Image 1: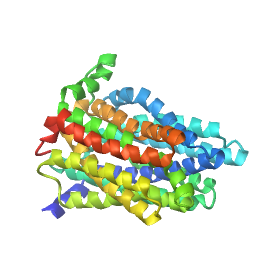
Image 2 (image 1 turned 60 degrees about the vertical axis):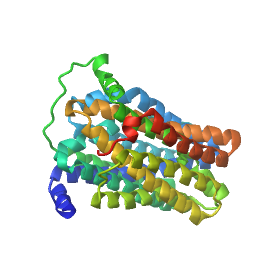
Image 3 (image 1 turned 45 degrees about the vertical axis):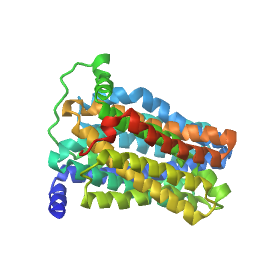
Image 4 (image 1 turned 45 degrees about the horizontal axis):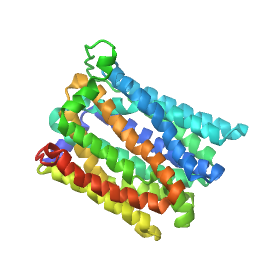
Length: 402
């Protein structure tokens, strides 16, 4: 029974500690992203600079993620996650100090973005690869779904709380983020599991083994690149400050609600998936979810009504949750444990590219042709990607079971 499975899942203490650590860490990260974006827009009022925040996070993540994946196969993944939380806490402390010393500038925010990108390069492979070590295989899909629901709950609370606290000043947000990130680091340090160190010696061929593995497994390649191109084109996160202030006529609280809206849909859908996991025709459902994501993005781009914009973003989150759970479960089940860190690193590059590079793409198009053209064209592109993957990756489209 589903209820029995959930009780069994929560009986695994290491998983519960990781779940709580991820909840605290993601909440703080989302608060920090809201404050950072609004702070930058307050300083420069530039769509280009909003895009640069994403680019400055993406480049170090791109350069470091593959070595980080190799490290995740050799060292304790919980400690790597804890170190990443500690570095992000340091960025919040630096921003807090800069406010009191008058050094909070455009250049500092971009430098902080680089540091955040470096921290997340090590966080992502470790947090993805650790879950199969904390629960038995039979509970993996529910563990991935429940972990995703924690992340989505944090993405709901984080932006809304960040926007609310920003009305009291950015210092309040940065101090709160620092506390939550330190708590996440402490929880992660208490996680224990039997770590099987990868036998391969440190070398470029070993570091790149995850790339070769993904390339050979076309189902995994199709699933990970689907997210890359769909969110690269369809993401509108970087432009939310523009939509909030200039098009929807709202302030920091409204921005927090807009950033939280996709997570509301994602959390609701993840709770449905915990109760009723997807079992059949998963390939078609994955592509359909991506197409719905694109259509809802188009609606958001055209909307000038705050409630309709929120609803459209809720739908994007629900569709993305289906995609995320299926992709994450599929990748973990198709990968042997001694390779999970490196394969998760490849997946992290795709996720990072779709988010940070997508923010840069959105900011660039918005600077040239305006935010509406940027979001609407991206949504249309996402629908076209879902249609193209039916032909390019038939093994993924025709996949019946996870």
